[in-house]
Image (tube, rainbow, N blue to C red):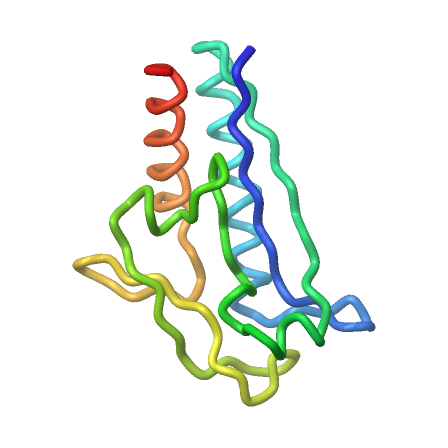
Length: 130
């Protein structure tokens, strides 16, 4: 069985908190994982979700690493032709400007489920051709 790995990383502070945009993206990632796993199992592809925590020190060095989604070891934005940007965040992130994703139509602070699924399907199609 082929494997499609979704890896999502975000800042988590010492109290186990994350910002709203990462918290909301987590819901999108989990829903996308469930749907992709169900759909792709019919094609012989197992989907695995890995959630990784970034420390405060790692985050301070590069805030754009937080709320990053990798699918089959490629950034989500590569799969869908999006660009990475940044915008002011809140709470746990302090004054940092955190990751955004921009498509031709929209800029997202929270990554929506449909974009994650789209990237996952493109990655799955790539797996089927190799």
